[in-house]
Image (tube, rainbow, N blue to C red; front, side):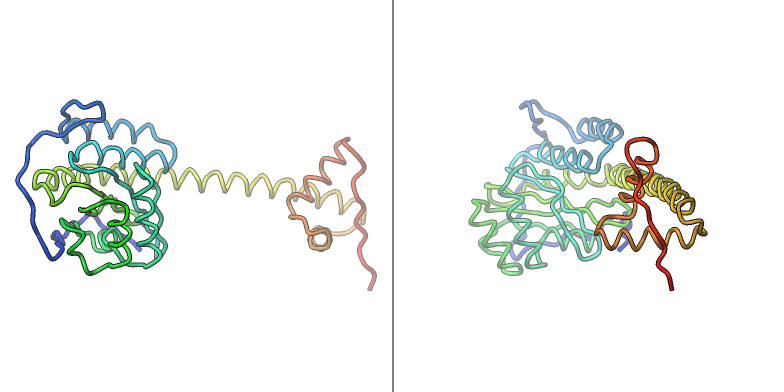
Length: 271
């Protein structure tokens, strides 16, 4: 499911209350930090990141930094119909997310799927997602929200925020939406880069496996004076009989021929 970097209107709960607030943000060390400073710092972290986990954890931490009244944040990554919390600043947020995924209904899935910000200023008044709401209330939260990250990739990403403070601060909403808009492109790039690295590693492993299988085929050909197709068929049948992967059997044969032991002999069946 491909998502584009387009943000739709904010989706409010039944009580769309947002209070006016201060303009400064608070960094993890207690000092004021603007969205611009947070964005620049996170850009640098994302460029250095080599794993998807590092990317999304940095995003979750940055969200907690720019929002004053938020107690916990998490990041939802959705591929097709599968959703998972790939980073969180606390266990309560992660548990609430899991309840939402089990019910397949809630604010973070809505934000990820629609590209719209979802704000719940009063959880007690929320009636759209009862399973998720009850989990959030039981966890001690009274206010929550979900902000889509426009990653322009084959995944959907949303930042989920949970607070013990009622109602939303208008400045906080503007700050987190600026943050996600600014970082969407670089987060999408990082996700695609890490996926490319994974695929490259998988391809390298496949090529290495193919190489050792070809060597094992050569050994069986020499033992049986048969062609490559017959030798490969013998290896496959032996792999199934012994319940081992073909590449592992091939490595065993090649290692033994190389002097570490006597290679097993595979004889073609007659008839």
